[in-house]
Length: 195
Image (cartoon, rainbow, N blue to C red):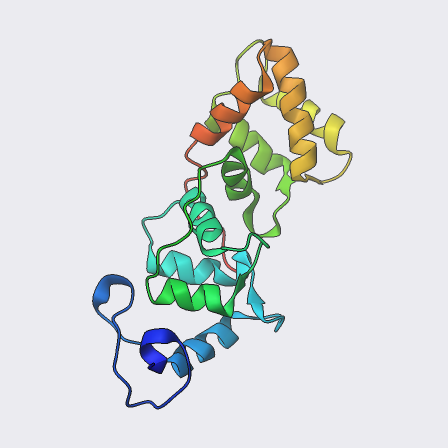
């Protein structure tokens, strides 16, 4: 079994296997080095933040939401990090786990690198989802709701769930309908800078 074809270390003269797109070959040692460079905190796995710039360079046409969905596909064991084996599978073009788009993908895409949502990010998402100007809900009302739920400078996903409950009552809708509206939103139009 070769180090290029199966990801095990043997010799550098082994057979090659094309990677994503079929145009370049990588030796397992090159992949290990790339992984180590990306693993900034040296914990042996890659976070979304650590992989973000690579993903953007690889697919500049992807939206932030597309990147979140790709990320979940790479994270086969659902532990919110990509280990070396998952990274190698992605580099060698193995099929990603199939993921269904979720409202959380949209929420995280607006959060940026810190994975919490600040007030301006929340207001932007409310605008993009189409929640403003409905039932008297404008930027001021959205800001007040943010302040009421958060009590801090940012909200986490549990707090956003509370916001959706409040919004559902205000709009006389089911929370699931709001979740579908969030899922349907394309996400922010630009990438956040990598750290």
